Amino acid sequence: MFVYKRKVQYHETDRMGISHHSNYVKWTEEARMAFLDYVGAPYENLEEEGIISPVVGLEVEYKKTSTFADRLEISVFVEKYNGVRLNLRYAIRKTGSDEVITTARTRHCFLKNGAVCSLKSCVPQVHAVLKRAAEEYAADSV
Amino acid sequence: MFVYKRKVQYHETDRMGISHHSNYVKWTEEARMAFLDYVGAPYENLEEEGIISPVVGLEVEYKKTSTFADRLEISVFVEKYNGVRLNLRYAIRKTGSDEVITTARTRHCFLKNGAVCSLKSCVPQVHAVLKRAAEEYAADSV
Amino acid sequence: MFVYKRKVQYHETDRMGISHHSNYVKWTEEARMAFLDYVGAPYENLEEEGIISPVVGLEVEYKKTSTFADRLEISVFVEKYNGVRLNLRYAIRKTGSDEVITTARTRHCFLKNGAVCSLKSCVPQVHAVLKRAAEEYAADSV
Amino acid sequence: MFVYKRKVQYHETDRMGISHHSNYVKWTEEARMAFLDYVGAPYENLEEEGIISPVVGLEVEYKKTSTFADRLEISVFVEKYNGVRLNLRYAIRKTGSDEVITTARTRHCFLKNGAVCSLKSCVPQVHAVLKRAAEEYAADSV
Image (cartoon, rainbow over all chains, first blue to last red):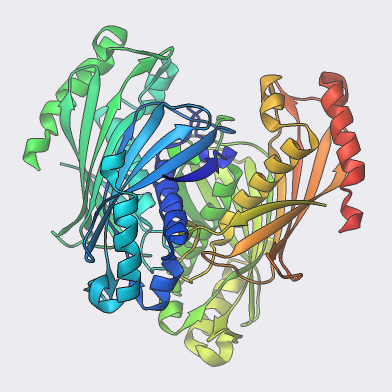
């Protein structure tokens, strides 16, 4: 299991006294980038190939709150990867607890020069890395 | 139809050259607050009653991008309101265009002293306002 | 006097119950862009000429706080403009009050292809606009 | 020397391709909180005593840019501490480089129940910790 660790910052809280819900979206991005680094497909390498991977869909379920100084652990799972689409799932817990406080899903495509591209043909070596990662970190293991 | 207008700011773009996807989440909050003002149930009045309304769920579909200096119009619709739960839907267009570039849904509950509260019993006059708004700005009119 | 109006958003507050101090920096950017629009030198036009204008220095004095739902008015003044350097000053008040709650100064240069450029030679018509604006909105009129 | 390490996140870049300048302000906060943890005066402990420490002044000098995936090291120094006022200075470098890309200074006071308080009398043990830290991490050692 891949886990990204993150402390909640003061600037991420709001006047309800909790982490503002928009920050969880940023944290999924941070966890995703760390995951891509970890499996060997850093996002900056994709960018160097002229490929970007925008978010096309996003879902978040907020079950419990977090706040400043909480230490969070974000597990990242691959729900789907076929070279053209990448769907990831995330489970956020506080360090030392098994309770999932937030779950999320992000869906991504890949674009090159503004057009959809398949990593399988554009960057086969990155495709191979992501395909292996998709098996190893499959979402059904959540 | 209620429409919240918003210009995309430079600090909301990322190095892909587009509005970062986390900002759309902030914009739904801004549109929601403006909607509550407009229908006569300002959020700050709820807070003064000791009531908060956290986001419990969030979904965004990113269809087209936006970037700095774009003028956006965010329509707000009520999908569900029963005193205990409020679900809103949002459609984002660029000013002067009919094309919806992003849709979103947020789900909310109401809490008082940390416990779920029904606006119907806690603040009946706010409940009446929101019930009327839910009819007038129903999501099936999207 | 040029004034940019802005409501404080919920997502801009922190758990101290006030607007997080980093947002004032974003607000100076918003006010600066609105000022450039107003005087006839929109930032996006500079970008189209391949020119960017990064912030090289920043100072903020926080005298009073603001919070969610406050309506702010940000006055923008030109402290210095010589084609190569642009220094702006800002005074933030709450609508309906004369009291300045925050002052700020930002300093900018202009870059083209990574090198410092003088607007006087790069884009003389923009230079003329900014020169006139610098006189009309001079900081000594604060 | 105390150093806070931080990777630049994608959501912190703007369409100039660099870290947006407002993020450096957030990073000084993160570094400050980490510094307070490190010297034994965690900010959350101050909050538990009913004390807050708002930023009253801020200065940033942007010398070089940073962008996504850069690893930054933020050194924190105490410029002044007298129980009532705390001024900190920051020097930001990229990991592996001696070049300072950004310097910053933040100035803070301490408030309890809305009034200025002296940590020396309010929380003498925290005062002692900060006094010692002020000596050990004095800014003249920059």
